Amino acid sequence: MSSPIYRARATVRKIDGVHREAEIAAGVRFEMGVHGVIKEHYRLEGKNLPLPVDYIVAATGG
Image 1: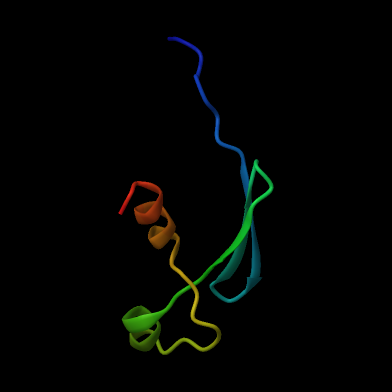
Image 2: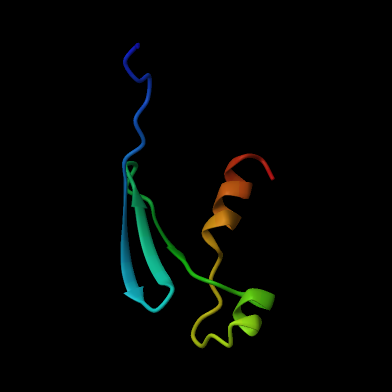
């Protein structure tokens, strides 16, 4: 097996409930959580924040 070409480095910390803050190796920080119909369906309170999957879609050129 060959060695990895790239290894992603990120840290994620819980702020409160489903609210998370992530930091990637480049020093960029961003917040994740829930919004829209998911938030309504589960009757969640707090700020409207992008879902983690929103960042994945954006990163792939979405």
